[in-house]
Length: 255
Image 1 (tube, rainbow, N blue to C red):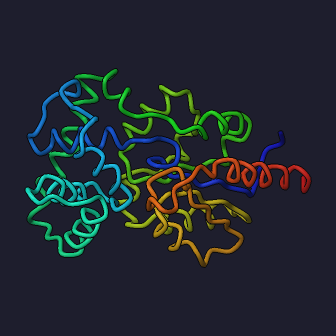
Image 2 (cartoon, one colour):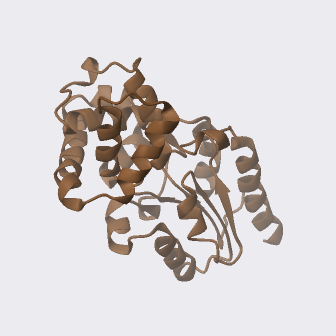
């Protein structure tokens, strides 16, 4: 395949390339002092099932504080009721309640990665699309960009483990997001600086896609296999791969 000079594929990480729900659950338990080791965590529980059901509500890591509050309350609720109460708490959130949890969350993640690296890696599973896009990364890696709120160390660690060769200069993670406070601003900056004429943005969080709605010649694709509302969940990976292929072939014909 020829090199793409003015095309770009922007990809999210959690919920698009990797299923990180087990990691988030374990880290949340450790951050709250409810567990100390990965091996102690039981995933065959109603608590974990509710956590998975509500995962689509989560944006920044501090959101997990309120989700765990709802799940661990003494009130018996259905999945849908848990979701509604969690949404209400997230709207009413106060930083003085969740700030210490957020710090503990990232400390816990780093600690698990450092002290039980193989156990930490086992918590995070690649989606099927990872195997499919590997060939495109090998031939057109300069045109794939990661735009994520996850910390760069764990991103690079997981990419290396799964042999995904993203250019380091094309990885935009937690630090960049903290500066711009928006994936759309990061993406808009890349489009302008690199003179990108046509692009695709793939994310499982609709609000990130909606924020990019006004960008010219950008195809916005929701990864429905990721952390989307249960009613929308399905594997539309084949459709998305076809769009990636089309963008690459288009440039080859133009060249």
